[in-house]
Image (cartoon, rainbow, N blue to C red; front, side, top):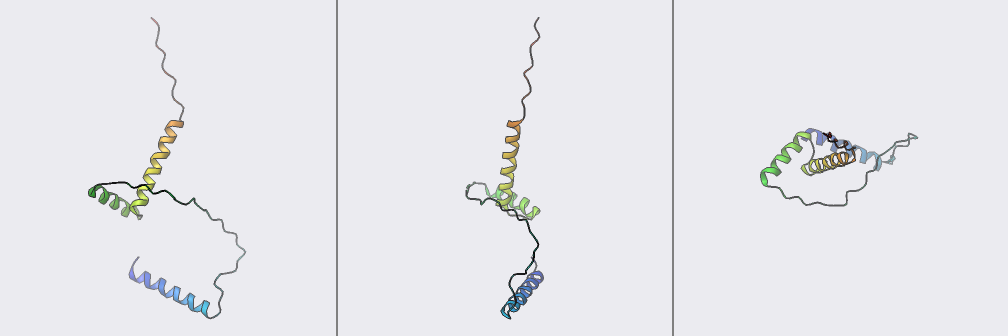
Length: 101
């Protein structure tokens, strides 16, 4: 985030604090129903050892995508698990029968 954008957000936050301090409502009243998706908390930590050059490569890839390297690693692990699970669930072709002579 640029310094200019940070300053903009800081100014906006300061205005909201002043509005609330002056007796304004902190929450906007609305009857709009909003659906939210709640994901299960991530409760397991998996230490992974990488060489410095592999860590740097992971960081570069993650930066290109605008995410953190551990998030990218988690995404890749989950992607691989999904593909392995799908492969195992796919029907296996029937074995070919040998022709009798």
